[in-house]
Image (cartoon, rainbow, N blue to C red; front, top):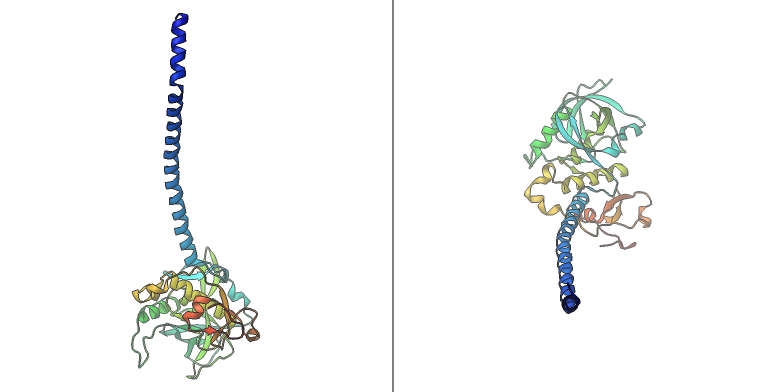
Length: 296
């Protein structure tokens, strides 16, 4: 190539340089746009996935720090709580008994060890299951299932009994907590059946009558978690609107005898103080205290 040809080629490159540069810039921009589009899709998908995961966690999360676990008892699946597996060990005293018959989901007939009575009717504290033998109410929704659950786990079993402030109800029945031997991950424990039935979706937390504050917290929370997980009786269409997790749902406090909910600092909590979510307090028809003015 002679000097003139090289000069002409150089002039052509100089003339086309801006166009080539513009093409390169456009190519880079297009590549970046494509990359961002795909990245954005993955990012949005990841955010949505995290949102789904977060929603699932909200459903099972507990302000009391309770972790639901599934236990197999005589071939029947039930739900209990990891943190409460050793709750029985805290008891100062208990009685041994053998279940003779299951009346319904919350009432059993048993013989206490060393007792002269051949049969003693026990009404379980803090548990209310749908009726099956009530003379006026007939068989209620999920009553047969609740009774079947109790029969499958308790009938003929050796159990332990513990008590609260009142040991006899107005019908002459013994009021008790019933503890059932279970196995979880190769270890033996005693689970509180009253709570087990609620957490598995076979009954309500019965708070109309006073019982141990700490147990009441567990029972109310167990019902809430069962409801949000649509377990058992809460799986019906009638309860579909109950399974909602609120963005703002702070902890408030109730007492074992009152009808108001309070802030933790309220002086009305001097003798009884039970943690509960605001949504659950409202669902149970508690109203805000006029003195401490809790959130509404």
